[in-house]
Image 1: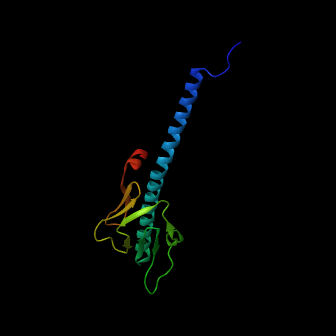
Image 2: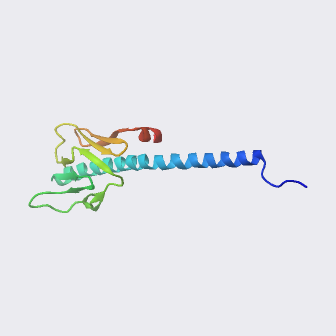
Image 3: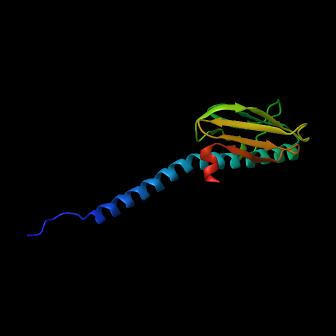
Amino acid sequence: MRARGYTLLELLIVIAIIGIAAGVVSLSVRGNESRRLTEEGDRLAALFRMAQSEARVAGRPIRWRADLSGYRFWVAGPNAAPIAEELARERRWPFEVRRIARPELVFGREALREPAEVEITTSGPVLRLSLDAMGNAQVSSCEGAECAASR
């Protein structure tokens, strides 16, 4: 009579497959957080460029203010006409924000007096957006082990 069961080789193959699957899942979850941070940085840079363009064309200042829950753009003043819907909408951060360096910017008809940097600190990586004197924004750095792994 022959004994029934699995051979050692079959068990090792199953364990190897489970290990590979667990590695793929853990890498994709870790990369998801840094990817959201990078995507939000790119979105914010595009919105900054849009706000600067609209401020130049309309000849009125557009303000950006951020807090730990989200950010928004608006036009302040007595004759505050509506701005583009894409800018006017209040947005929430898609991740936990712990600190924002430079939480307020004003985009005007004229160029910024000096280049600015917005720093967003999360529970993991730190995102920095650089604005040149003309108000053009770009993601200047994304620091942290998770962020570097996704690039």
